[in-house]
Structure formats: structure tokens, C-alpha cells
Image 1 (cartoon, each protein chain N blue to C red):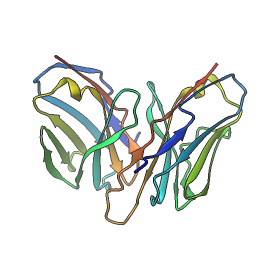
Image 2: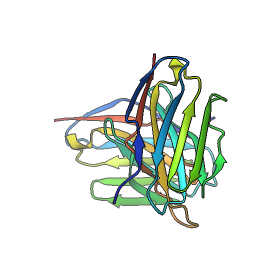
Image 3: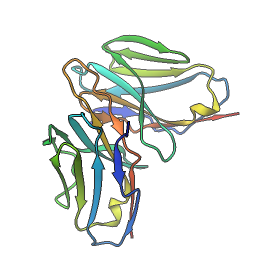
Image 4: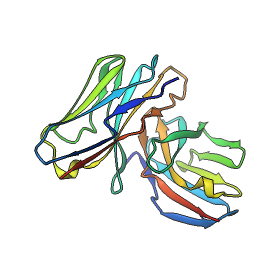
Length: 107
Length: 116
């Protein structure tokens, strides 16, 4: 079993839609949960992170962790074409990533 | 500030040839990571160094792969001999790992390797 599992998609939504991206992890000891965003032909960049359980909001983005079910989510409200990218979840300090979900937001 | 610098950006080689990928981490960072990304397998951790010492190389596919970090500002990933299945984008990332810190990874632009 991989440490982090993520549905690779692809996912295509119309502009303005709410997007939900999800991952599961296996090790209950993990404390930091990260979301990275990767544009085409670029390296991933940190989008946001949460520590332990709960929610964290940053503009149109919300990261959520449910440690009881080992489930992490990223929600994007009012999605924009500029949000089109691959989104990767990661757990630290393991430094391993999910497969990444390729998101396309159509105008 | 300069980010993580990788070279070459693109490499096309023939099966059996030696390939060397290079990485210069961000100055002051104490950890360096090599990843491989393919459509089939996603972003895989190959090896990571802390203070120039290899900590976890369990992701290195086989003996054909080797990585070194002779000093804090340089690392190499070598494939010898290369095979077509090694075709992928190889990323180097660095971070400042401190207790209680998130250890955000900063990635380079990647080296796209094609083995014919």
C-alpha cells in the first residue's frame, strides 16, 4: 500500500464550479498535510498546508484534514481557467506524494 | 534569489548510455530530494539527503541509479546504463528541515529524459 493515495483523474469542470480533490493516507503519525500545484512543464509549488486536523482557508482554497478517517481534501470555490493544473497531495515529513489529479477548468 | 537549478533541461540519449543529471539547491537549505515523474507512476521519491548524507534511498529503482551530494551546493543523479523505461521528468527539490517546521519543498524546473 502506498503511503498516499490520490485519484489521478483527469477532472474537467466549467468555470465557476466548486472543485473537490481528495487523498487518503496510511500512517496515522503524519502531522503535516500539504497540497502542491503543478502547472504544465513546471515543478510543483506549495499551495497550502494544514497541521493535524481541521480546516484552513486561503481565498478560494480550503484544505481539510480528517485524521479519524485519514482523509485530506482540497476545495476550490469559483474555479477559474487559471486553476487548471495538476494538484498533488503530500504528507510530511514522509516527503511522498499522491499520484496528482489533473484539473481542467473550461471557460 | 535563485531557485533550485537543474541541468540539463532536456536530454535525449540512446539505450546503454550514461546519463548524469545535476542539481544546485537553494543556498542555506539542508535537505535535497530527487524525484521522478511519469504519467503512470506519478511523482516518486528516489532519494533524499540531509546535510549531504543520504537518508533514504529506498526509492532508487535499481543499481543502475546512483546519487551523490559531495557538498551543500551540488548533487548528481546518474543512470548507467540507461534504458527506455527510465524516460521521465526528473525533479530535484530542496528544503530547510527544522523541527516543528513544515519543510516546504522548492522544486527545480525538472530534467526531461528520453532514452531511445
